[in-house]
Image (tube, rainbow, N blue to C red; front, side, top):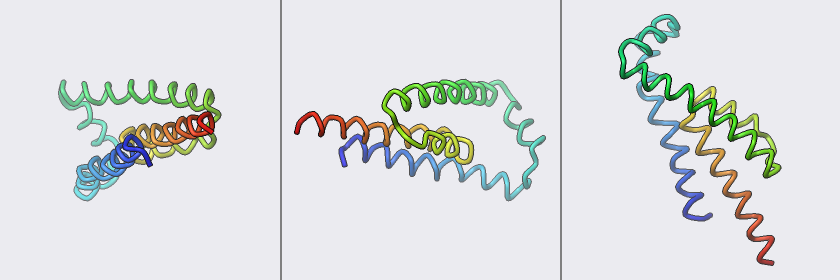
Length: 113
């Protein structure tokens, strides 16, 4: 595994654990209260900034995911969408970058031989 792959793997782990700490706290305190979740998500300018930034970044990620994944003939692109929707962009994006890097390095190994 290359240094870049290890970095992406560590980001996958951090991107799964760190966002879930406050989310689980919210669920423990409020249950699955979607109206409250949305109200708090857009409760002030700075949280609205981060929410909208995340939403736009998600669309950019999906476009990049399907474009680059198709270009490199990567399989199971839906897995990254599921990771994005169930955990977050903080897992889906580094996981895609990890698998993309593995694919790119396999091309490099093929060319060197």
